[in-house]
Each structure stands twice: as C-alpha cells, then as structure tokens.
Image (cartoon, rainbow, N blue to C red; front, side, top):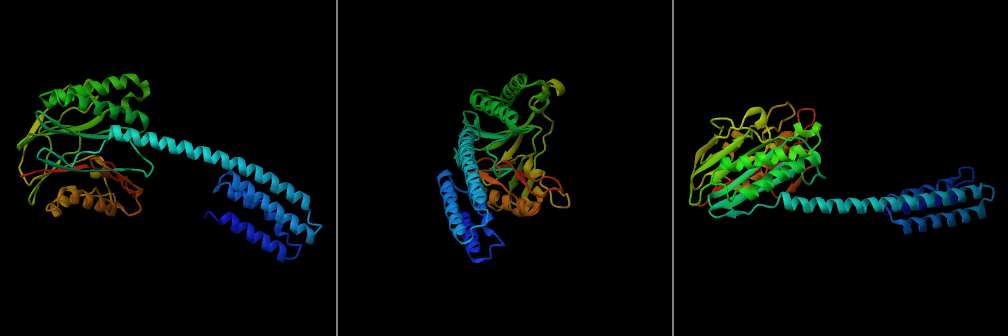
Length: 364
C-alpha cells in the first residue's frame, strides 16, 4: 500500500515511453503525487512530484508535440496541492492521536481496572465498547473494599456522548467517596442520587431528561454470608449455584438515579445467599438486549445453566464469544478491562454492542 504511488509512477512512465504518442499516458502522471498525499509525508510527496517532472521532461525529448508545458504545469500544481494536503492530514492524525491519549487517560480514571481478588472474593471483569473507536461512555462500574464488606457497583447512564460520560463520572466519584462511609446501601444510593441530580442541573435544559441512570450495588460481607443487593432499575443479577441458576428480580422496585422527583425516593435492599463456590454475574443491558437476526433476545439464564461449571474468567470469555456468535459475526468491539456486559441492536443491525459485566465468586 505504501509503495502504490511509486508503482503508479513506474507504470505510467513505462507506458508513456513504450506506447505511441497518440495515447499520451504521460498526462496521467499528476495522479501519482495526488495518491502519495494520502499515504506519505510532505517531503516524499514533493520528491515524487519532482520525479514525475523528470519523467515528463524525458518523454518530451521523444515526443516534442505532446503539450509538455501544460503537463509539467499540471504536475507542479498537483504536487503543491498534494504536499499541502499531506501536511493537513498529518496534523489531523496528530490531533486524533492526542485525543485518544486523553480518552485513554480518562478511561483509566473513570473505568479503572478492577482487582482480580478483594479479600475472599474473586472478581473477573471485561468491558467492550459498542464501536471500535469508542473509549468511554455511559456505562460505569467499580469495586470497593469497605469496612462493611466488598461493595460492587455497576450501572448505565441513558444517552451517549460527553453528557453521559459526565453523569457516569458523577456517579462513580460519589460511590468511591461514600461507599466507605455509609453503613447502609440506601445511604450510598441516596448520595449517588443527589450527585446525578446536581450534575443534571448544570447541563442545558433540553438534555436534562437524558441524565437518569440504572444502577446496582452488591455488598458481599467479609467472611461470607448473604449478599445484599440494591437494584435501581438495572438488569437483574444472575446467581450460579452448581447447576442451579437464579435470576434475582428485586422484591420491590427501587427508583433509578435522577428520577426520584418523578417516582419518589424509594430504595429496597434484598438479601441473597452467597456461599463459597457460588458465582454472581453482573452486567449492563448490552448483554440482556443482545438479539439474533430474528429479533430474539439472548437467553442468558439458559446459557448460564449450560456453562455453570466454568471459572469466572472462563465464564466471561465464553459469554463474550457466544454473544458475538448469537448476534452474528462481524462485530467491531474493543476489549477494555472492566465489568462486562454486551448487547446488540435489533434485527436490522446484527452487530452486538458489547458494553459491560462482572463475574465473581467467594473463596472457600
């Protein structure tokens, strides 16, 4: 690919010298520096243009009536334009590179890699963006080793773009600050509710309706026992106990973040047994909303029942592969270390949008 401008130049030059004058292949020489502008830097592009000028000058000794001055002028003009285009392209590539560095740094702050083990809880996670160039978005997750147990957060802000990233950042930072101080999960969620509401007040009025989020907090006590779950409108967690699969729907619905003004300030905590050898799978709606080409949702519970014997890391890797296969091959996703959840669009677009999920198990 990088040598294609040279190949084009050699082919055109060879044809110009070896064919009758009536064909005038030499008039195609300006195409070579034009092609070089999309592949090369400025100096090689200019040098190739100069080489094309030499070729045209040589051709003029054999065919003096080809309109050489016009072709030479065209080569010179195209070379100058190509050099400028190459300069602009390199500037934009450098800008894009810097933007990606900033996005990667922001991701390390907002979506930092989770530890593989916290106290007696083994955690595995995987994050995949819905688009290949994506770095950060509205999904959020974190884990905290608190005096009250290992607390896990996963959630999803409605919407896309910087506004969703800002709302997710507000939730994550609030969780990191309050997870260690609030003895009750309701207190943590109320603080997160306030954080999202305050963030929404700072954005334009037309965007405020977009800034609500689903969230789930799980608290695994040190030394084992029942896991406490507060689910604010998030997809239900999946418990794997040997060959038994339990999709835990909350007994009472809790209010999603930033919707308390409409739905009230109601938060309910469930308690579920979580013994050594059990696994807990948390995920965003990307997993639960994955569809095949016929529009059928991915059967997560049935899938977990078939793969219950896998270790947490193997469970996530297998889930990722099966989601891609279920939605249709050809997905462009970029892996990121984080909780894992995946999801595709509807039947019209079979590329799965893999976002975020966590699999964890207590050690015996």
